[in-house]
Picture 1 (cartoon, one colour):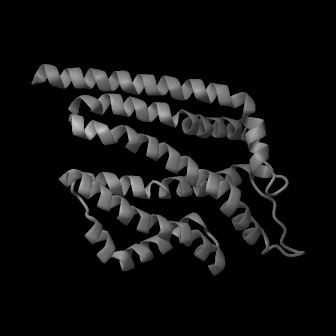
Picture 2 (cartoon, rainbow, N blue to C red; picture 1 turned 120 degrees about the vertical axis):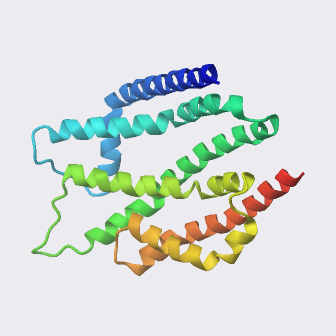
Picture 3 (cartoon, helix red, strand yellow; picture 1 turned 180 degrees about the horizontal axis):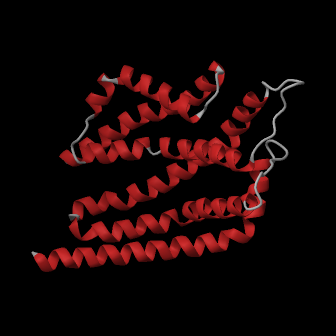
Length: 232
């Protein structure tokens, strides 16, 4: 038993080190392109400004870290799979690979949807409150923290069907439970949408919640497949 414990601990250390290696490598690859990435986001608002000598460098490093994490995500999840695979049954392994692929695809899909559709609209709405005597002077650091917050929120929210499939598969939730509590889900989704889209515009909040509602009901259908597959 003790040998198994130390063996698992050694394997965990190996997977963490390999994951860090991938993350550092991709961060280094992305860094030369961090200026172009920053331009992609600042095109929405024209210009941003930094207020400390080191801030511009720190932003490039921060963007490189985030982009490196996003790009290396499939490899990081693969390392996670290699760590847990010995404990999985053959039946569990059948859906683990599609599950990990779905995690990546849904996350990327949520980020892209946030970038191309919601982010421009949210920024336009927030900046529309400027006046002749109240003009925006956007801090580069705060602007990119805002961008990362929104895109990460959309990316994570799109994992909903995958997470619910897994929870159904291991018996923690059921389609009936989700269907019966749809009213509470709507309240939670409204709160979540208000957090990731910090505007006072009801239209923006409504537009944001529509895909989340859609994902919730997709998740109920996905749970049916998970439960049926488990019974078969």
